Length: 183
Image 1 (tube, rainbow, N blue to C red):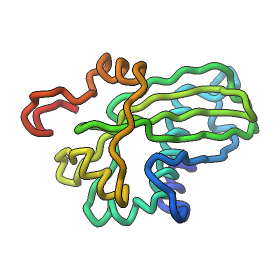
Image 2: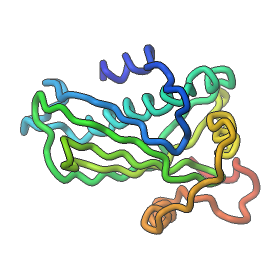
Image 3: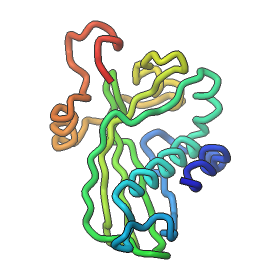
Image 4: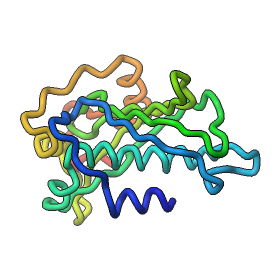
């Protein structure tokens, strides 16, 4: 939790030339407070670690100032994590965060936890942006703000598109405006 607070209050510096579709890498280490009673990283802590990596992704793009000017902020609409191996005390690991694509409602991201070449966990998430008054920001507006000549969305991998439909976050054709959907 302290790492998340620190990264939120003191984001890392933007990476010159970083694009929306470029992966962002966050190196971390397991601390005693990250462990559960079985002495491995608690499943909920993985989600906090993923939050830190997403903050770093936004920082890499120089997105904090631009989002702050508009008073927009990101939230997670849905996430699914697949755990393969247990991270243990003092393990050093890496989270690679990348955007898979977006639609009118949300951005789809993948986050992969690795030690060396070994995958420990992977996650898909759908995120959206809200304004301070609680209204939803259409994803194309966010992409235009963060993307500096943003490309069109890549085609989502079929399994991610199926997941988005199954958790009911995918854009639905024929909906009236972005306010027609529930969070």
